[in-house]
Amino acid sequence: MEKLKPYYHTVQYYETDAMAVVHHSNYIRWFEEARLDYLEQSGYPYGGIEQRGLMIPVLSASCEYRQAVRFGETVRIETEIAEFKGLKFRIVYEVYDKERKVLHARGNTEHCFLNQDFRPVSIKKMAPDLYEFFTSKG
Amino acid sequence: MEKLKPYYHTVQYYETDAMAVVHHSNYIRWFEEARLDYLEQSGYPYGGIEQRGLMIPVLSASCEYRQAVRFGETVRIETEIAEFKGLKFRIVYEVYDKERKVLHARGNTEHCFLNQDFRPVSIKKMAPDLYEFFTSKG
Amino acid sequence: MEKLKPYYHTVQYYETDAMAVVHHSNYIRWFEEARLDYLEQSGYPYGGIEQRGLMIPVLSASCEYRQAVRFGETVRIETEIAEFKGLKFRIVYEVYDKERKVLHARGNTEHCFLNQDFRPVSIKKMAPDLYEFFTSKG
Amino acid sequence: MEKLKPYYHTVQYYETDAMAVVHHSNYIRWFEEARLDYLEQSGYPYGGIEQRGLMIPVLSASCEYRQAVRFGETVRIETEIAEFKGLKFRIVYEVYDKERKVLHARGNTEHCFLNQDFRPVSIKKMAPDLYEFFTSKG
Image 1 (cartoon, each protein chain N blue to C red):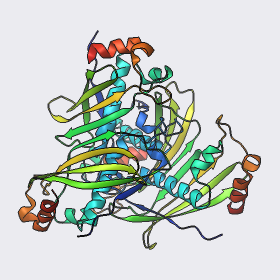
Image 2 (image 1 turned 135 degrees about the horizontal axis):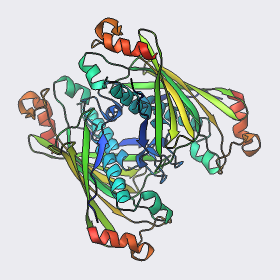
Image 3 (image 1 turned 30 degrees about the vertical axis):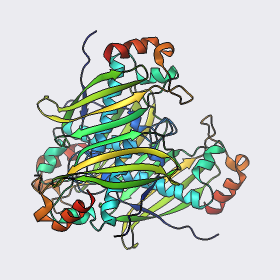
Image 4 (image 1 turned 135 degrees about the vertical axis):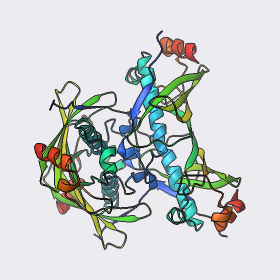
């Protein structure tokens, strides 16, 4: 399989705060953007996952901020599935500047799969292709 | 009926932008806060309206910005149903400082009622008490 | 001068609300994205405008919502300077689906120019090129 | 010193997402609300800290989500300084329902103090009262 492209996000003015840098809560939103782009690039757009009756809630999220990002800049986010244990998986993110010279932040999120009754499910039977994909990565 | 209390909102740091004032998009969110508080104070909490199978989408929103609001300030929002014509209604908002000496902004939103199939409905039959309430105001 | 490209925005999951559509406040943010992209394409990136000691606050904003936008969709925003009267200008926006078959929303924002003391200024002397540009459009 | 009051936040409609629960990024914003309320109750409102030439950036943030919060609910956030080592400090948060029967989430944030040149500073000399306060807690 070909390598996935990193995700680029152009910083919006409404993402800045009174310190004239991006408000820290927005990195958690960027992780979501990068994660859904990653799944789409991998052939599993989130809309399709939902249509199969699955949801992927966030169990935890964390971010370590190293260097502030400012309005007008574009960040490059590299995303990877770091761990998959059948029920849960963990994704790691690195937020670089456009040229990948500065690491602005890094973080990770943990997830599980829920069915339409909001109950955790194993995707091994419900979505074997997805199971295969996560197993090959995690 | 007793007069409704104005709605107070304390400005959060994440609501500011790089000009060190509240980002203008947040006023539209404050209008929503004030509107739902108004309905709740009037005896029609939005959760209850939804349970009766009704939704109140926003048809239009506008805001005129007069004086910036900053972090640490608390705004006082006065809300009124300005017009109700059976199907649609309009709400007007005035955003003051806490002591009501400065008018920071004013705006309005227009709404209709939708049923669960996302179709516009008259509430005259579906929710006569709500109809009565809007008629008495608009 | 060549025609400007429309602005495309991919809807993010965090922009949706419990009605499973994009929350109406986000359109005001999209207008900002489209406006700054428009200025950048025209040769006036906002960062450069700020460096010249000018700010462009929002005096008013309004949006008329016609058809909801959902997660997974991409919108195409067409932006135009509709009016420029020396001190103030008005921009209009039309939000279409990607293929420009459905008009989801339209709106406008009004602006003036402020100097670093937060006072309204005429850009005729301070930024004659910008004045020329706005005059040619408005 | 009297015990601090927990911080209450009423969930807003614009904080929900298409899963009809509060979007996970908002908890990071609630932590900020609770943190600034905590500092204010302790006699150190953030505006005053900034006036002394100090900023308190976020070095890291994390949240563990246990049970979703929905529109119409009010959360009770308990905040505590967990650690202070002269330069850095860590705050922990617990997000409960209003009656404190359900733990919805918990998390923590790490911070340092910056001067106006964006350089880390020891507050021992610059703000001995603040130093005293953090030492008594951490």
